[in-house]
Length: 360
Figure 1 (tube, rainbow, N blue to C red):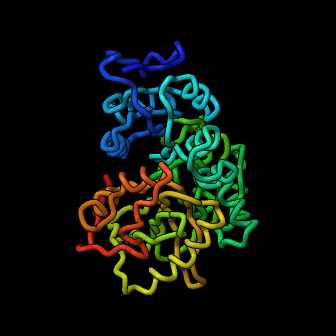
Figure 2: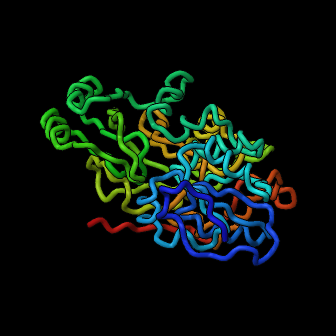
Figure 3: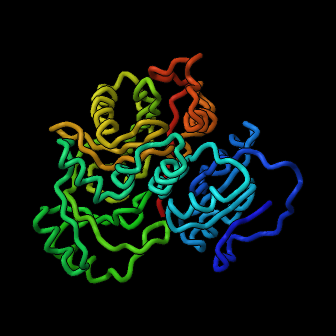
């Protein structure tokens, strides 16, 4: 294996041999953590090499996935899409696809695909599908229902922003994931206490938090809507409900996560709303994971991202539907339509699964 890295990125180096076989075309998997191993297997099934492109801090990569080196013919550490494109262009093998694999990979993947003139979603809207501040601003400009919100760059301004938004409010780092750093502000006293305790915070992926989002707390049912987009349009995969044990306000949504039955009227309402969101945010190809709430006034956007979901939802698809999540997504980014012979209006499942989270 060959590793192309700046000298300071010793953490990503590992022993390997070159010249074992002729170099093949390669697929750039951006930040292939969590679901990365399954994507690597899908790439190898196609007879292609894996170029793992990491945009996260090296220490974060090693912490999130100690075995990240496995399954890749090339690992590179980059600061941005332009740097990744420069490195990949200099290699003798051809890069034939770029795939975003996790939450933080969207912006670099879209920028890299554009730079290499490969299939991808527009880089001009990539930040709106990752950074929740840009996400809120785009929704506001395009008539997508949003929580009321304020952006705060100084920690001491958080209580005042919460006062303007109204209590209860929610404090969020704009580039986090999995509710990491999300805090319910149920009163002015809580807002002051939380602000007083914040110091040089980092999001879940090791990046510094430069600004905070203070937004309205929306009460209602909470859903995750998963879709896949092809040249034929947006296609619903499934809808999951984040169920809580009681009616109290919360900042950690994970308790029971249950795949919603097709007969639930919230499913159709959620999909109508999310279809608009995907078009508004420039999702042209590949998977998407959108989280919304539905209150008495209808759906409200919580967040959207153009990548596969986590929480083992993809395992459910592989085991209980005709969807092959990693192979099908790879095919789309290779410019193919894997659904020509098996149309994808809405998938059917042979089981209705659920995930139970134990909080401690």
